[in-house]
Length: 252
Image (cartoon, rainbow, N blue to C red):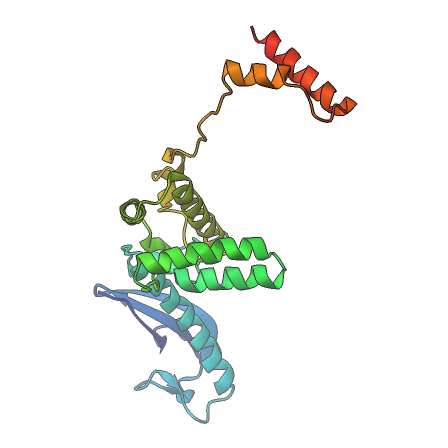
């Protein structure tokens, strides 16, 4: 059940001025929690049926702005918690001390990131994230309006399987997952997602085999280099070959 958020004129408390404080009232699972808005109003200026200032209320615009800002703040928190599928109560919503996050979809964050790099003239970075974004679009059939919190270990495993089904090389997959991880880290820094359910702690990119096979010259190849006459025996070339021969013979 979602929380309902409203503002009430708290008649249970009367100030020395005869005014009542305005309180944010949060209802969740039939439990209430009140939070003071830091402003008060005379009951004659409050419409108790509509829970809003009357048309002729002094400072009506200011009071409405305070109400709107506070309700928006808490509705945003509710949206974040619902998006991350986290449980909460009316009390924990009010007492929540963790930083709030400016929710952005993966697509929105990537596009903003790419735009910023282009403005800074960092074309290489821009191309890297564009390539990553294009892969994500193909994987999701262009349905990338998800939040970073939707990217969990199961999602990453499916993404890996998708690459392997298409015969992608380990080095290519490593680059794509490293770029995605980098974008995720930047989203955390930008407060676009929490770091509580960070999937890359479990999903290890180091598992991809990106080592290049060692290539060694045969003994016959080395002897050819050492013994073959140089067409243009300039001193620097002769010195380079001598150093090569010396280092090779030292290995025995």
